[in-house]
Length: 334
Image (cartoon, rainbow, N blue to C red; front, side, top):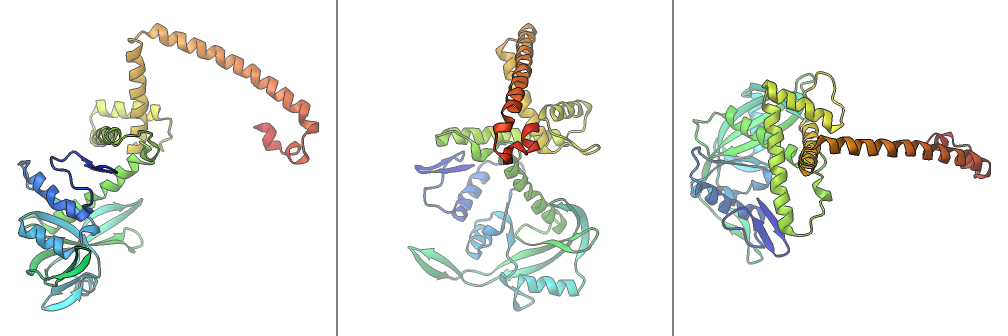
């Protein structure tokens, strides 16, 4: 995780990127560092359309890193000995009925059916890259890649909801269905952003003033999101009981029969952690809780008296108010 600041990058990486390095230029160092972790599984880097760069795809392939990158539909490639665009390949394979039904998926709130077709393409064009402020034309070796095309049709209307053009150098031991599923999972990142922003953490309203404080809070927020996702997937009795507790604490309504969303669970978790902090602070002394509750009850009684006085004042001054306010029944109900 990188956090760009006025003084450069703060990062969880061993070697943070330099201040002026762009997003794509950071990927290669990330690939190298993740490779140095010596994980038990093979790593495949799944990246969105921003990484549709022939120069970088060649560079990553030459250095032996595996990737799955979404391409733009007007990308020029060589296919069946001709130079064509990816969308033209899709149209041709559709006419040949090469798309096979794969699985049910969700796009937004809509249910869709995923269809997949695969072929091989060659990237053989020269690419352009800025070098010392100038655009240079850089030739390169042709590379053969798998093109996995995925389209999602509405389960009812059969309208096309989405289409993906996925380029990958992963071996054929991994099926095209598996590759398309990996990219489908990548959309969880958007759910993660939602949880960080409007769905729970309200990131854009954080008031930390130093970059280090923000980075620490980002890491803790990420742990909270992961905790909620793990809880969502758990189906045992204890997890179900905890979910019902968190839904109650969240103060949000849940439609009958619907499973709780990550946003609701996160809101409930936040309330629960605050409650737990309070109980720890009073050393779990319930007599103090009863005392606080009694004080709150007295305040509420006084508040009722105050409301009656305010209402009497409002009625007294009603004849002297401007007509617009005097005749506004909503104002007096409020």
